[in-house]
Length: 70
Image (cartoon, rainbow, N blue to C red; front, side, top):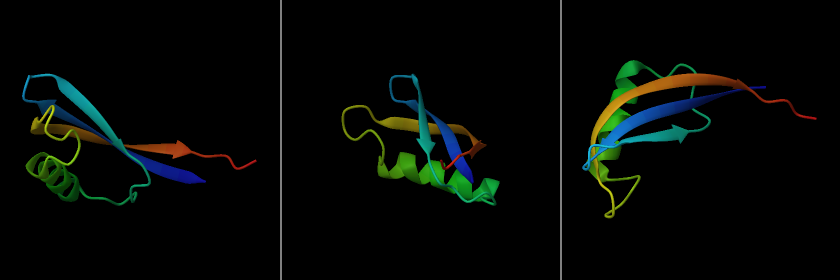
C-alpha cells in the first residue's frame, strides 16, 4: 500500500527552521494547494501556538512511502 507524506518547512519568529510532516496526503495535491496550506498554517498559527510562532512558510516536499501489511 502506498501512502504520501507532505514535509513542510517553516521559519519561526526566532529564525529557526521547523519541519512539519502531514500524513495521508493526496498524491495529486497541487503546488498551489500546498502553498495555500503552508500560508494558512502560518496565518492561523495552527502548529506551534503562542509559545513559538511561525513567521513564514519556506518549502514542501511530497514523499511516497510503502506500507506493508503483515
